[in-house]
Image (cartoon, rainbow, N blue to C red; front, side, top):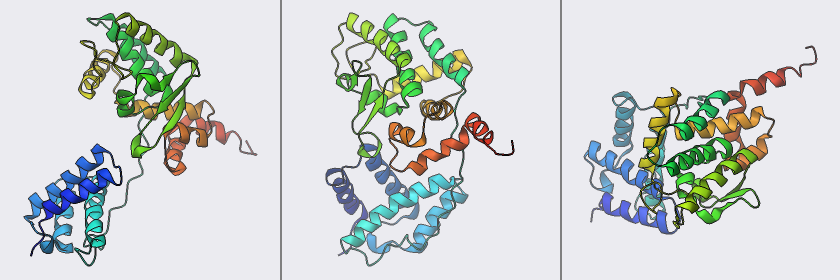
Length: 297
């Protein structure tokens, strides 16, 4: 009896969610990657999967669809995880994707904005014209968490009211990327901005468990709402940035201010400190300070 790939993949995703506790975003990517492969290759049953079929699909994406090396590897990993699971269940003798060589990743520096541009984003997010006063305090606090604490957009939007402790100047990130928990300190500038936001939130009588709420009701602030705010601030400031670019900005500014790489790694929630070291190359002023230590200088 032939084994239907879609049915097997549903089992794989369910186990990944329940047993391995992977995030909904990862599960969605698993489903998208296998669905794209099935659509392109015309394969329906596991017995029809071959290394050559997988190679044709991946090469098609790289050549015809102009996938970057990152995109190629993301598809590769999504498919590899599923076929590895199939091998562990003895549905396959070996993983058919393993013989396929992956492209070398391009080591690009993380894009950031300058200190002056970061201050401009904070200033304009508060001073630009809005329908409600609360919106100004909230928008500035959202960007401040990314610039002063390095939070990811998802972490900002999922942040609970109870996880912000202004008495002890700490933010608890529960279930961040990879399901990791961490604690991020709150600096004085961020504390003042968050206090002003909380004062206005209290004025409106908001009781939503999420730290950030919508302007039109006591409901959580959404990702689509954040995209609208980012777009508006980009227009009025003339500064091109994304939510994640503000996180990169936090990392490079911290290094330029003298923060050690280990502490920064913990604040960013990186599993491997090697991930954090790329910011050393992105911080020009940090490198300039280090070259002054040359003994012949």
